Image (tube, rainbow, N blue to C red; front, side, top):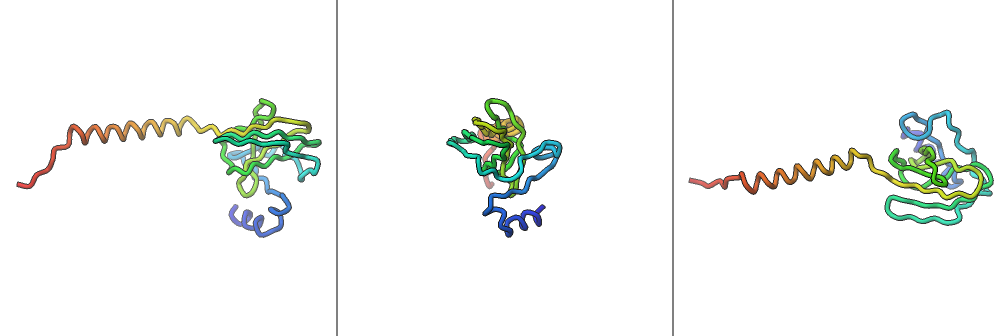
Length: 145
């Protein structure tokens, strides 16, 4: 994978707004879902807003288009198009992408951390509290005699 990414960087693809699509059952779209081909010239992002872990776009396109969001791909990114969840996929160099159907749409990308992350934070706070409690009430000062 590293060699493929290196080749992409040294070729003129980034400057010509061409991306490599990563197909994997573990990340992004399965191979059976087709991404739009090329970069249509009749597609426009009318406006965009970003706040924290949320990006909102108003997109106008005449044909199916790939919307590439310059955020590092992670399966915890959830994209809705007009309020309906849409599958995401990864494009080089590890950006988030989604296929937008023809028409004018509101696209919202939102990062939702997994439940495991919250559990790990709670566990860490409990452990920190237990260590502080033990030191406060059970540590006996050591004296030299």
